[in-house]
Each structure stands twice: as structure tokens, then as C-alpha cells.
Amino acid sequence: MFPRHVKLGNATNRLKAQLNWYLFPPTEQALNAFWKAVQNSIRTTGQLYSRTIYEPAETAQSLPFKKELALGQMCGLTYARMKPEDISYVGSFVFDDPLVAQVWYRSVIITNNPVSVADIKSSPSDMTAAINEPDSYSGRHALYSFFNSDFEAPAFKAETYTGAHIKTLSAVAKGYADIGAIDLLSWKIIKDFRPDLTSSVFIAGYGKPMPAPPLVTNGPDNGVCGELWWNAVSEAFAIPRISRIMRNVGIGGVTRLDKAVFHEFAQRHLRESSPPKDSHRLPSHTQVPVTH
Image (cartoon, rainbow, N blue to C red; front, side, top):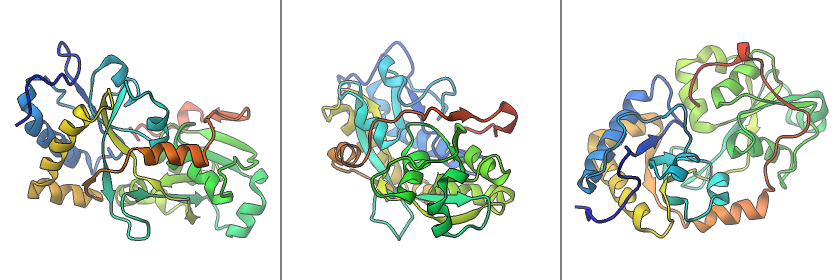
């Protein structure tokens, strides 16, 4: 039972979910069921919530500034750069990847030709890289980490910004780009429903693992709002049906990291993100209309 006096956001508006990281046709039903279970656990606050799990016109970064974020997921690099008064850490999903430490995740490095690792690393200037977003770890910096341990941008011929992991996959599969990076869970999900794309590329290796992306809510990051949503998310995963369907998605549960790990990782390994001067967006006709 949650205390009614805790203010989670702007009471005049519905708080919104932004849970589109792994929102694909095969996962939509499971994620909707998860969000409904979370709402049922936190309903005692009296706050109204959106019924949908994704607001196309918003992001997990934009909603906190309006005090309208209920529960979202964002890149750990983005979280590390936001002010604690604007965003609050809730927890992190546990992914089904036995080859990395629990609550860490990694990206698949893909190419459009079967090129050896040695050849890839020796000739980035011959390659156009497909990248989902400038501020993405899994879609940008993980690719850089495949080439060098200090995350310096390789001297690619060009970087093409796609807007989503599945669009990166499409760009590489169709020859608009030579190489790209996709987080492992997205790869596994896409492989099930778009084998035409995954079978058209080659796995060259994996990027350096990073702490799993944080689930977040409105700030301030003083533990109060984050604790409320953590309890609600934990209760949702305690429901056998929800736990089962989320595990089928590839998410085995939820846990909490020391939030300092995101700041330490960003400060230790990465510089401020900005698109290179030779970057460009794919023409609109090459885009694949999906959310992530």
C-alpha cells in the first residue's frame, strides 16, 4: 500500500509510460500486460496513468521535464547526463545473456559481408557505419568499442543515423551501410519475426558490455519516487504470469544497481556525444517504420 501524500508528477495530466525499447510486434502484448500489472500495483496514489506503453511524440528524456513520466527506459549515458532533480532511477531489467555479468548487456556487431575481424579493424575508412542515435551506447559507442578500448570513433567513411536498431539492421542488410551495432535482446527479438533481415547480415563480434539501461521516473532522484516504482515493478514481476511472459521476451526480472555505476561508466569511458561532421540520416524511403 503506497502513501497517498507522495506526489509522483503533475496531477492534472496522466503520467505516461515510455517502454518502447523492446516494443516490436511479437512483444507488444507482453509489454502491455507488464505495464498494466505495474499500474495495478501503484494505483493507490490516485494518479491517472496512460493506457499505452509508448508516446510517439515524446521520449523518456522529454517527459520528466513536464513531470509526466511514469515509467520509462533510457540509455545509461543519457541518465548519467541528466540532472538528479529531473530524473529518478527505478531499477534495471535482468537480461538473458549468460556470457556477461548479470545486469549488464552488450551489442551484436553486424556487417553486410562476411569480413574477418582483422580486416574490419584494419579498414574502417572503407566502411559506412549505421548508427541508431548519436547518444546511444548500444547503437553507437558499443560499435566504437569493437574497434578500440577507449571508445574513440573509428575513421569510418561515413556514419549514417537510422533512428532505431531495426533500421540499422535494415540499412546493413540492404547495403546502405557496411557495419552497425544492435543490442543483443533487440537482435534476438527481431530474429524471430524478421529472419529476412537477420539472415542477410553477418555477426562479426560483440561490443564491450555496459550496465543494463535504467528504468526511470520523474525526479528528484532522492529515492522516494524511484522506490515507489521499484516496489510496483517488483510486484509485477512477482506475478507468475507476468514473470513468464516477460521471460519469453528475454527479460528475466528486475534488480537495482548502484546508480553511481552509470556515472562512473560514462566518466571513465566516454566523451560527450555529438554527431561527426560527415554523419547523415538515411533517406526516408530506407526507413523501417517501427519504434525501436
